Length: 562
Image (tube, rainbow, N blue to C red; front, side, top):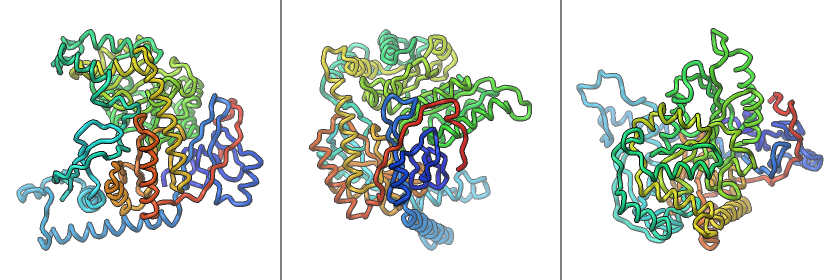
């Protein structure tokens, strides 16, 4: 199994925050005597969560319940059976006993080196294509709290059939529309429509040539003010903001320390940079510090010269786990070992903090302690693109060295206006309290939805304040079944399996929005409860027990035995 945040390799009953059941210290936290006594009476029935340590100004409750052993075994067996049948069908197609419906190489190319790895084709063509049948759909209007969809059907991995079956008033539990700004009415839509008439849709040039508009300058000043940094730069694509800017910041002779669950854009950017990459366990500060210590002590391989730069890559909210980065501890380590910190706030900007300024505000930290603040406009702002904020020297450097700045077309003016209007609304500069109300509504929805799911008996991952809510499904047959049953009940959800998750940790991922009313959430919860009983998904066996705080000191991150 994948190591948990505390570095435990086998997901003991108390995986959360790296605290183990025998009263040991992990990640700087110790158990209370009451919790210890309860653990001695029945450790199997207790699931521990962490409260705030000395570095934290607020409670930090995050839980990752262990996978039940029987469920893990049955999940492996399920994938094993699917794999065996996949190889059998591939054998039958090879001897032309069964007709082949997917793309294959021509006869004259049989001696060429294969483009696809055989094991990958077996999984995608014989396993996942059957798992995903019946729950796929196409959104045909805005991603509001309730939307309209068209169902699609996959006959093969590369063949999608539009059924023409339209379903209205589907409760949308899968879009990243955290604050509800992705809509076709209201001040954002009106402002974007006005700019569309004045500027048109496209710019047809890069920012360094003749594609730099006054709207782009206005947006960047507003973003810098919103983040509390000296300067900011915007880009037309969130994914490229990471993948094209990390190579501009580090290169050969530099070291990247990356969380094992970082987004693909961060992974791609790190690989393209040419820097040495080392992975630390998810949100595990002991693992991170060990890598930092080794980097300082041993330096570069062979030459033992000091690294030119050490860059730590983390996310604000991890979109598959629903967890929040331990930013106070990461910053403490960054300062202690003189490293640089790159923070991806794609999911946390707008969704966390009293005024929506992200994970930095959520923890009450100084934005100057984060060297590179990255985020996207694709979630909370209902638009597209991304940004990087920080020191003026950093932004000026990226303007001339970033591939996204030099070669990519500028942001579309109506999109820029959508971002500006929504950001001003969040900041209260539109003269209303709508932005503040949306932030508060999202926080209330998040806690209510998570609490109700836990009360029902589902295993839920992540932080109690994260609007990304993974509900564990585990078995491959239940992935598609859950999506289909929810769609039958007019609820659109996203289900995710291997390789996007570990093979035994398939899940449904709910994304909450300020646009969801309590009535909508109650309707969704009622149907989820019903489907959970139907598919027997209520695996949780634990109750939550908080741990005592331990003041932070220089020994907090000392390694302990697993």
